[in-house]
Image (cartoon, rainbow over all chains, first blue to last red; front, side, top):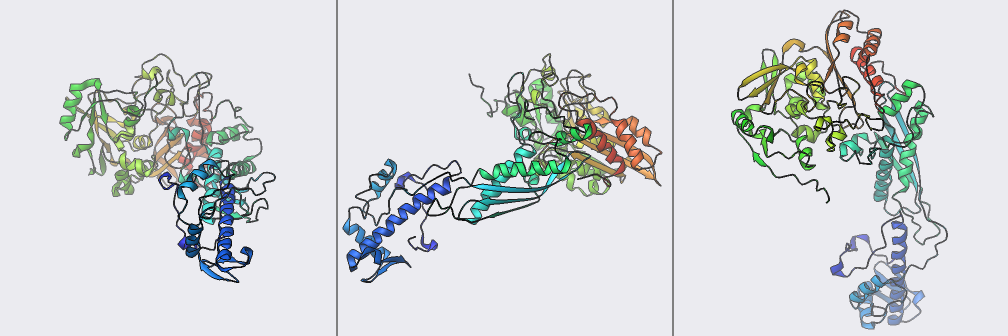
Length: 294
Length: 337
């Protein structure tokens, strides 16, 4: 929004000693959605203030000025962002953070107060509309190969396609889509907690017992894609990712298995060697209901 | 009070540089000592504070326990030789590839670098009740928690259970029995050599031990004779994860074929009983027969006769039957969907 090349952006990670404001909570697979809206609101406030400072300096109306190429330019003239920042400090008040909006979070107010007077400050609360829910969706596709003599199977191919609104960061999104698919796949293929049913004591305490997947359990081929259709309920168009691929990964593998060996062979996850082999041997599902998570 | 775990109890650590010094320490400390090889088994016990030895005798400094030597067309493998070295040894690869395959399927590359062949064959069972500190028969109590109507026992025994239903988890053990190996054991009194098949003991003989090693003894080496050098080998391990996992069932066979007839065979399955389970009757039955689907089918069926299943481990019967079948037939013709 401010037209600053990425190479010139100084990213400062969370640091209370630097009086950085709190981010929104990272959870509920809403982080990208919530955070980009908040960032958009703060950016819009910064642009508005830059336009006002330029108009104040060079004459004309704020809306006649545009922010681009690291400058604020309009009918009366042009100034660099650095010059505008210096002007913001000179003007003080709401331009450099000495006066703050009433509706911002208390933590944001504390941070902004401590940072006031150092330059032009964009600071605002996200008041954009938010109708309905902003969940993302993922479709998973899996191909499995089952060894009918041992019950062993492996995932030959896996594809996940995500509908997450506008794609903000393709590599990070891809990591989320495939990483969380892998979590779901692990629920399908073997990761489990096991408790003794009489004593209620956990038995699968070590990794070799509760069996998180290894890299060799991952599908031989994995790919992802995203629709990149902007969400109308946010000015950025982005929704979150995180949990949605879990169910896609798990269910795609279970469905592929059912397609390979039959619908009635298993009734629940995880589907392990014994599940398939015992059922194939008996010609029907022999898995006990979910009383023991094994 | 909360149970503190993952902090190992206090012990005296000894790092002898010779077998003689190690044996003197074992004689001195008796049952208060724990022998440490690669540590993959021992450290779990210590971190869970389930074993609290007064002395730990680390064999890692004893050079004479490490390395692979060629002896009379066979091999002598020092007990402290890391599994990775066993896998990489050219003679193991050339003549005894059964052991190479078995050792390479143990756990993960990191564990094979640290874990030793002596430790792999001598490791304790992985029954999660026993390893969880439950006071079962094997731990000196008077119940098997893994063998009740509500027990979770999918990894447990289908053969030769005697009060305890735990299984031997080693991958190299069945390969060594198939190769007709023998185990060199030393104590301060001298050396004894035990055929691999007699190294492991079931709960009927001693329910608290997995092998014949007495507290004052050390497994120093494993000898593999030339008998099965260059035979036709088959090893397969079925596990839940494709790396870093114990076998649900594994099978090892060494076979000599003349023409199309099986001339000689040693066939062993593990993780189905407290000891590697040699299938002597199946061996006798297939000798003189053609190595084909029919013989394989017969062998598989015969192998599982007498299996007794628990609540969750019935699948081990078809799994073992099919693995034995493959060991005779080979992997070709496997049915997949």
